[in-house]
Figure 1 (spheres, rainbow, N blue to C red):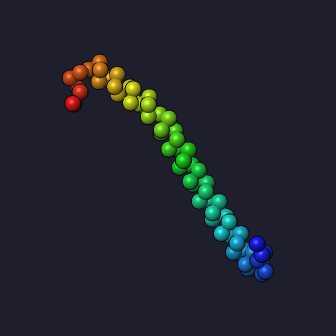
Figure 2 (tube, helix red, strand yellow):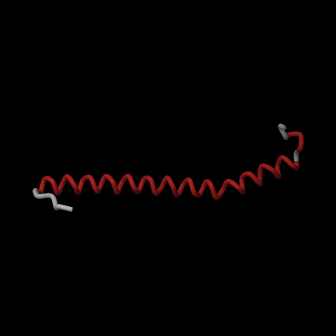
Length: 61
């Protein structure tokens, strides 16, 4: 891979890399948040099922 020949090209590449790193960090945080929600889902489903089992009048099926 050839290196940028001018300082302006180098700065442009550096800015692009910084932008990509910011985007990557945003994606990483979003994935982490989604993973936490996925991990919490079974507990939430179980709580809801137990609540409905203890109060059958609230069952809507």
